[in-house]
Image (cartoon, rainbow, N blue to C red; front, top):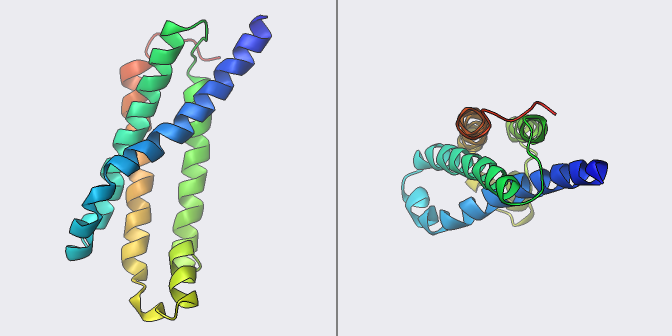
Length: 149
């Protein structure tokens, strides 16, 4: 039973780490017109939503684990953090190469000139640094007394 509980805890951790940051971005979605007027806000908003989203995800998982039979561990937070870091690095590489989803969509609609590659790279770096800060603060805030595994 404890093996199933451990596996279930990892599954819940991965789900929470995947869902909560995306919900946080939906909350900030109404700010898109503001970003279009001031392009320099894109990286700032991507950093902010990413940091808040990961911080809330860690807090939500620890809260769920403390109110259910699930057990929390640092590894349950660190594994999604490494996967998120890897995804952010891949997105930065695609943005630098000009083969990101945004660039491809603009090329397919005939608006290739509208693509601002340096801005997209800065925005992707905003996500990367936001994730790193969010995970770091979240681990030191919420996961102090949890075992490693």
